[in-house]
Length: 368
Image 1 (cartoon, rainbow, N blue to C red):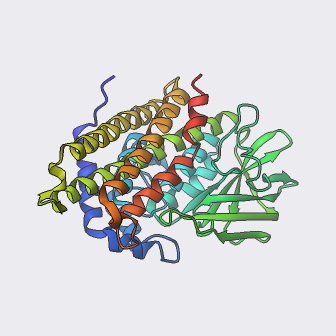
Image 2 (cartoon, rainbow, N blue to C red):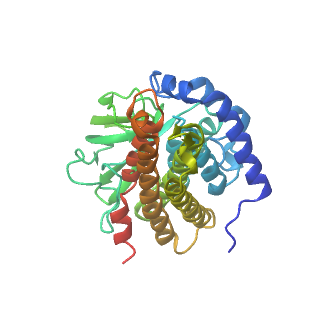
């Protein structure tokens, strides 16, 4: 298999990159994270109306664009490169979960709104990193709240670190039931539902604590065991694409700075030692891109070794973006640790994405 985007996919990347360069520069990103929803709603509308970012993975029968995960991966990489706060990741996960549930009625009720950008949905899945064990998928990790349980059509429990959990219009909740993990739809204004924004080190990711106290919910589909394994793999692949974009941003910033900063009467980029370090950064970025592309194709083609390929990508990309972010800080010198410079945004996002949907060591453990 050849790892290469098609001409149409490259045009999508170029169009989105141009749009984000105009509307999601450093000042716009800093302003967006302080907005009520944690992102620029006007830019989100533009992305949905002009590019269709929320509709890419939604089938045409549900008013979507009918593309696949490969196109979503391209969008995620560009958003990562611009450090743009947006609910795209949440929408990809919700769409995958709904389609996997096999509940056509729920899909018809929720997906058209997501595709149009009019509805933002969140996947509420117990656990800090949403890491599903092989024995009981979706139960999360110890100490990450009280896993949500269903009894008599009502949900109780607490879930930490839910992407877009406090601002979403619809919640899809993974909960324990008598016959295994199940999926439930909960309205944003349901009685007994409490949602609280939890500020994180990475301000470009919107996280929330969601509590359920006898909340009325609608069951969606049946047993989710196989579905959750695939959703977790899709989440890992999606985050890997974001990581590639962040790493590219760090490399671009560093190379640009090395051409401007003068020390000892020379541009610092002319020193051989720094050239070698930036060359190593380029290797990290390009190898991460190859791994993320392989994971994207694995998801798009529903590969039989999907879990292995997405775990390879997440493990490699997590360590690559961490290394690039560290070099970005060091090669910028003292200016990189100031609030006014974007290097700290790259550093913080690199570390937060390294944990989301499983840290590198857990993904490596699945490959043994």
